[in-house]
Image (cartoon, rainbow, N blue to C red):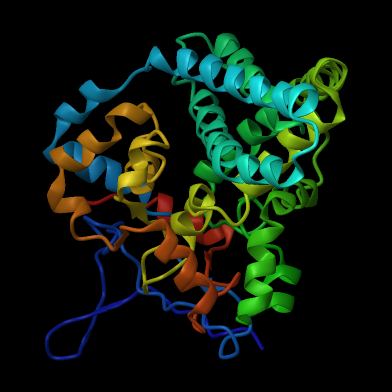
Length: 365
């Protein structure tokens, strides 16, 4: 049985229900909800909110107090150089294990996890940046850089990620529209068992593909271009680096998007560790190696700010971000997800499109 929907409501100091003014969103200014987390083996479905996602309105609340944040908007020209450098390193390592060191399987796997997995997790950040047009002023140039970053990833993900990630921003948590939400079989089958949760993390690279396919949309022109591009680059890697070189890139992808500290942000970002909060930032040291991908609340609030300036948002508006729950260790985040019996694939919050639209119409006076 699905849990009862927790309607967003507030009570005064005497316990009387506060009825908000018409058109007023009572969550202002932090926009934290009143819904409760979904607990495996206690609740049968995801948590339910009856208002829109928090980021658009929180952005307006922050800008009302800190309009200077708009000065952070714009591209970071260093992104293209980072992309070319990391692609070159991965292809060089693929050549090394494909043509030079051809008899060290354990070493190949170790390097694929430690170095290749870490670099591949950054490729995800780079593809994320270009899908928001934060590397070049030109949308076409951003798309092309996404294809370049896709070269060592083996599978064509750059253009599909762009398509579905932008939908995630527009419809965060909306059933049937947000492709980042877990499928029903994920949380019904896996629940809170540590073994099944480890398996969930292990197959997470595959889940990106399955969730996208579940949207049942025809491939776009750019997704088809991505397919042709990736098949071509895979053939070139096979030709010049050999099958072991391609294997190295595949393992880097699987490790880097699976059980890896650099992939912990997939859990950190929207899995509900606290009641009422659906997005979380990470403020640990690994941000310096992963282009600040941990600053997820800041990114969702201000999608026009490039990776290098996300920490500045928190510094400019501490009264908004210091009050939000956050992570400080990606390793601890993964540990808690696996071993905490109140966490699981169902630890997400959803909303109907009707409630999302209703919430969007509320304007604070």
